[in-house]
Length: 213
Image 1 (cartoon, rainbow, N blue to C red):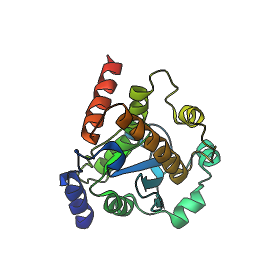
Image 2: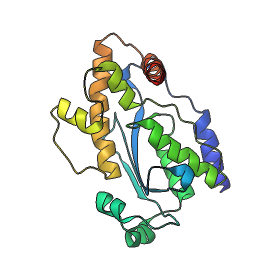
Image 3: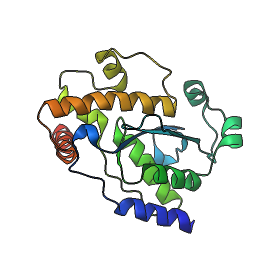
Image 4: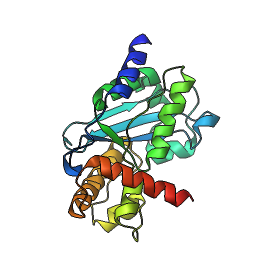
């Protein structure tokens, strides 16, 4: 566990490049599939997929073991059953070690990021690990910022950009399609005059805060 703890602390300390143009920033898009929506009530991650926006040929995918059985609706949705999870899944700390090594030095992005990041952080606490504190560009709120009249859901953006439909609710597939959506958003931001990823992250966070009011 010491190696996992050291990896989390190092990940938290390494700053991504906030000055890079949005289309040149190092961003890793990730997605988690879970046993439910409520990590504080015991729901777990059952799979995670990730892909760098600038290097889509590289990818990360792991099944994750959980102590609780996967509910039938989740099995139907994701295609992951208990036998598969128990045979191929890794313990959460082992998965986290590999994932953070894969994403080190990058912004993390997800759609919406609040869901996926929250699961990582709650499970860190559950395993008594330091909490992962990534620098995040939320692709959902980025879409709301840049296309305020569009449906900002992932399926809505897939339709908006006339992208091919792929199998959804598979962590790696969802990460790949989100990365493709995010790439379009990053170019839109640059064309609108946003010259650094740091500015886009800040404006997206402000958009999110204004929405909450």
